[in-house]
Image (cartoon, rainbow, N blue to C red; front, side, top):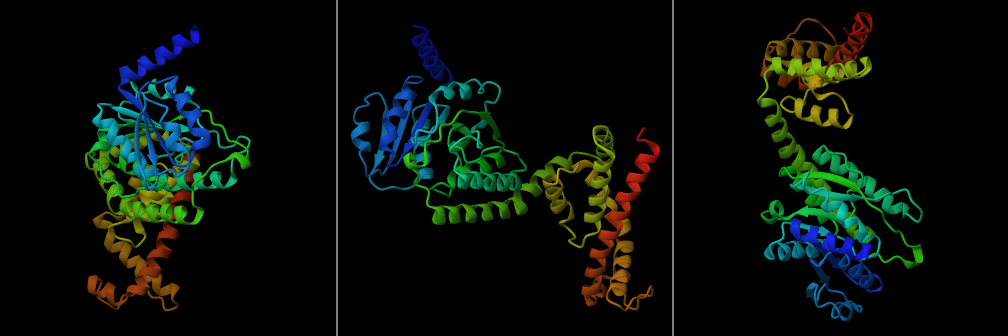
Length: 394
């Protein structure tokens, strides 16, 4: 009796949240029946997308009259199946959809864990984070997930524990107006990254997972083709992140702040940092402020600072060593140091210190600028650390 009441409560919650469950499937007949029955005990709102299966999938699906079934004869990939399911769910008036794989790895009991997070995160994709260290975990899958997590952080700045999990809750409204260009496994990477760029929240919730013994596993992942497609997608997304997303985000974040605001923000956050963390952020800021990639110093620096977990506000202040009044001195010192590094040094400058003069001796300037950025960064970091220790950071 208690179990029946819990199932009824779960189904009512699905109705209340206007949420459905989407099950994309391709040649998973050995698990599909159990997965559908498991899901139906928690929700009556189920959409199965048969992605061109050639096994007994159609025969199995013919038994389920209350399940919405979309089927097409040619396999087009998991991404296409998910997008088809999203369109169908939106057309039926659902606001959310939970996707669950049909390979038997996920438990329907975790469906309610997603629903309970909707009120606190109404505009977020919630990823079901698996325990990737448990028994029978495929070592190749573990590597692929770490690979995916790393590039997800590069493109969005967010840390996620399991970006390859197919068990997710999606808000349908923000996805409805987006157009995605991938259609197979790589879609699940693209949708996370591009949704994040559109302001959709990305979060994770722990879930249980079953990894069957190797001889029972069914996988349609093509190691060479699919990994190549994912790598190409990550390359495109990284380029878009560097050229568009990160510059726009940084501009929005700092354009509304004055230097005074940034200073006080740095002062407030410094209280939670160690002397070494503050000195490291200052050292890296000075280094990037002088490094000869004018116009891109802050952009590249912010990305690297994020990846290295350096305080970005302190980095930003230190990087302003290259403010316009300092630029002539930086160019001069870089040029002179470049001469000494090339074995023909002199403090006298025989060429005109202008853009045309620097162009004529570009190699000498670039070598010197790299050297000066390293030296100045080390000095700034060491001096900052000593002063912090000496004055005990009151």
